[in-house]
Length: 605
Ligand SMILES: Nc1ncnc2c1ncn2[C@@H]1O[C@H](COP(=O)(O)OP(=O)(O)OP(=O)(O)O)[C@@H](O)[C@H]1O
Image (cartoon, rainbow, N blue to C red; front, side):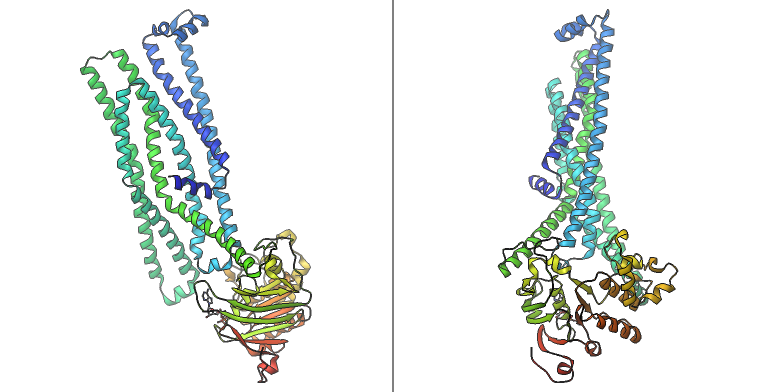
């Protein structure tokens, strides 16, 4: 439980002080609860035997000073006091409940943000080994479980433990042996329920895993709908879904049944106890006055004790059931944290730089400017858990305004090299310097200099305008820059034919556009953001010859003002580049201009 609590504290963003205040509020309610219940028994005794007023010194003092003519009026006043205490308690209870839900749901929202921020800013290699279904599930489902199956049960069980302890103390004071037997019964019920703790944790794990699987199946089947339809494998995905849905239903229903077990067991045990207690008392001729007083306390206490004790047990079951989800969040957040620290550490150790290395964070520290030259010096890179280097001793120089092309067979390392230049992959060895300053001194600032057009453009299910001005608020979109980017990317004709123009929605991943149109939007996006360096990864591969020529011409016209890095398979597209680098198995094996490299006169790098 200690480990569970420390994981809870790590995952939750709230300060310990806030949690402590919440627990104090719960304690206050419990005290009021116990007080209210504790007063009902003596009140009933007083009602049945008003002479008891004279036997208690402080009741007698109150009666004498109240000025009432009869004990019944005085007892009615005491009853009014109990009603007021209950009223205050109910109001406080409502307020505390509001506070708790507000607190838990706010924490859920904060946790979602924390995870999203972590996923967006973590080292890129983290995503090479993670399935997006898992990330979606963590942000949507696990945070929900953290709120309803960890935070709320944890707080309510802390409160219920206080309520149960207070009630038990009250009962012990009233009748020790009877309460000891109730305690024994509760302990037995708890011990029985606790026997299933591993089972409950297992059901939670099964539920969570089947949820992830279901998201994966939806991603695969609906995400690749064309292939699913054409191959005709709908029933395959349906049967996969059915297996996971059944797995989810079985473990979920078993857990729900076990959740209701404590309430059923405790109710049965208490009724048995009360009936036995009355029978034994009658057999042994106990004073009926005493019996009524004790029983009324037990009866009223049971109204609170039964729900509190059964809720406490159910909450413990829920906490066990959600231990898998809590572990998932805890280890994921830890991994994000260590991943970030490690990448900063590895950059620092690699470059022995004392400067403030910043990854994925906008900052003004060491703002990079590209005025003259970009130098890649002896870059080595190997993917995690792969012994062979994907890049080996890669060095190249690129002057401002120049254009270079990276060519080579599939798997030669072109995309890896571009990812290293983009600052997404951190090399194991070597450095990249812009005018003498390492890009690792301020990666964010370096990335602000680059426009990237990947092989397959990612389009949001939004308008053309927002897809071009990606990540810019509507009111901050610069219409002149937008128009210029549309013109250069040869999108004017397409947009003029659309009824809603630039406000036309492109559909999920741009399904309402052709491959070439999607690619042109990607080009317009890079141009809109007016970055110094443009990296184009096979950026014109989906275009027809005529559009490709027009765009290539437009891109060529940028050379001199923009610095270009192109990845190309077709040699015709690199003809106008100042320098061409040929990659083979992660090494630069040739470099030179078009004539030297493509037409045969090779100059080694
Ligand atoms: N995430 C990864 N984990 C392990 N190895 C990888 C990963 N991504 C790429 N590789 C390997 O790195 C090598 C270089 O791949 P890269 O994608 O850079 O080649 P490329 O020249 O861009 O190929 P293509 O022209 O087909 O896109 C390949 O052997 C590839 O299998």
